[in-house]
Length: 391
Image (cartoon, rainbow, N blue to C red):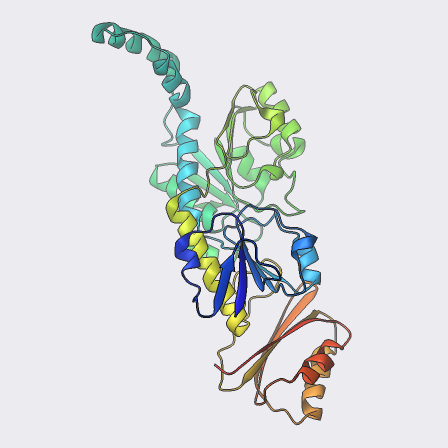
């Protein structure tokens, strides 16, 4: 029986994907095979020798020590796109907040104490002038990052009558296919910033993107532009942002990630990390991550991992080995040599690599013995070996 430790509240619809006859799920399990997590912070202490997978019910994995887990052969999954619509809808709210005096208008009405209807109407009509805004139609929206969320935001902008520009240095073929031809592709992010009235950020938090919205990048923004950040807080240099708001180059910063440095700063509006906080998004993320973890635990297949290659091999009638190793020469040859020495026939196999890690699925005609697993594990560069019975 597989043991799954659940951290945070994981949607029941996701947890129900696990068969009670094959899985034990609880929040305090020792030595789990896998951990399901949302925002709880994981560390080295959570990486027990039994742990082979972490499933993040969401896209960001900055709460997981991915590099450390990779070294130990622990596959980290996320759920790209599962909460995309929820984030897109919040970005739409951010766009509307940026152009209309909605929040101050609500606060103004909330503060009125008139009980007579005529007096109340008079106060409303007198006060509304200060909340006059502008329309989004005809404005230019720049979308930095055109993945699952960014492409939906770009499409939304088009539907609202905006001119939409997009830039993504790592645009995948899949993302390019789903992107509307009406989105104008920019050559670099500087050109995107210079031509946009509103810029919406949709890039992950990586070493290359952290602090990328710095003094130099913000200097390309057109005067009075608005910046929306519903991606990650650390891609923006908050001190540089405060300077641009003070100078007037940026008129507004609307973000889902409150930070102490910008609390109370004029032109800044924060929401309390609401991006994926919908019933639908939580269910979608939980179902998606559960299915991925189940497929990995039962068959060794990998989909949507942030640290291991995507790999899937249909099961044959034989047994299966799953091997994680450092991406160096001759390891696979060593494994095949060990199998040949024991007269074990390979029925099918697949090898993929990603950066410094490689992963192999090898179907064999003989059940793997403890001696076989020990011999393969002893090869220099092998990180983790798992075995699977016949399907």
